[in-house]
Length: 639
Image (cartoon, rainbow, N blue to C red; front, side):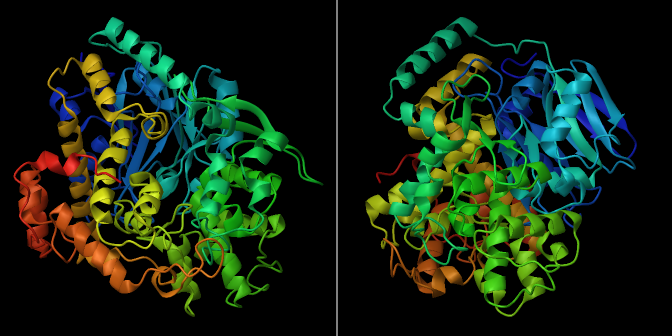
């Protein structure tokens, strides 16, 4: 028994159909904690560097972290990981809801899938009973309909994680759906799941997780609930969820509009949080053990179409499938949200693909003939629905877009790569970085490709000045240590970021769960840094170097000034990007080429990575001496 953990690991070989259960190694648990920590170590150690992300040698790793399913602040998450078909490097994506806790209640901390099944299957888990079962009757079904079928067949008390037709057909930005609208959305993990012939994982657990000091943990958590329930940010989060940030971002000149051509959408009022509540909201919705209820369960009725139900739209969907695609009605945004959820594609990457296709059509780079008689007009539901159908079926030019925006730009050519908005193959999140250079740097250097959850810097950018370039790299690195930590332990970061549940309080809760009385925030942040460097090494070992070559965004972000809105004329030059990258690499302890140095890798206990990079000639030359006290790197910077 390991306090705080389920205690077991399942390894499933989908080629042979064999399932092996092992106890979780206590040292492995302490060293990597779960979530993206377990995933980073397993992918680095087990996936050959030349393995096809959609081939049998890739691993699909599923893991709740130490906080998931325990009576602790915001412990509801589960992390899915694989080598990403978008970036060809480490990929992980975290989902809320109830799936992670249910795995813990079944005594499980880690599922590792290898191989490829010769037929569609799903993994059935009912406490100690674990089986691969035929999934033929579910194959081809959308995620939400499939989840209902599984619950009808197995029982409402099973938690389901499944893919839709996009994952089955290996669309590179396919997601994994859960709880009728939650997604492990980023990195194309759903495509990896589909490539393995795995439709779903169904789990029911009835055990308790062993807790070192449950009475103390209960009182501790109750006090946090009482305090945060009165926090001034709690009421708006409960009422609107993240949707309220549409107007906030728009007013600050960072809201992506018409494929990031500009940063202000003059018709934003129709897709902000208030119309969501006024026109669509059925009920609020919460993840396991959460008192914020920030999820919004919505009913959407468009003229001439049957009503549909969807969770959302939350902010990222409201930006990338909203103003970025020219939609100005909340009903339309929610319907696109539902289309993506049903197909099983990430709304963030999906919105980026749709808007990229719209700009290509606008510029004459895509024709009606290529779109089977359709167009790609800003704000057209009909056009989005048709292109998505082509993508999921991989039909005609849908095959081009099924690989994401970078892949599509390679096929279309004619300068389209300049406005294919991505870094390392992954489409950007819903914030434009020209008026927030720290945010742009965070996208550029994120270990999984452009994604806001690794470091969200907008308030820092505004506080320090949107034109300020120097000095922001230190804050980006700090945030890249603290924010992804929550994905390691499988806790929601909103309580840290919005209602002031401190990182130290999370550490104290982990100590109460595990009995690790010597567990500290510095140890946790050092683990975050170790994971970050391991993922960077993994990326370089798969893609070559120098790392710097992969850290630039598409040219729109350093060649074009913002043309309109509050951020009119804001721009970041290529020289500015180089200044930020030099600072960033120095803070990280890497070389100017963007490659980790031997010194930092050895300091973090990553001797194997240092040796592997040395063989490839991909070790960086340390730019500045490492600080004598490594913990200094983990202290918050004043914004």
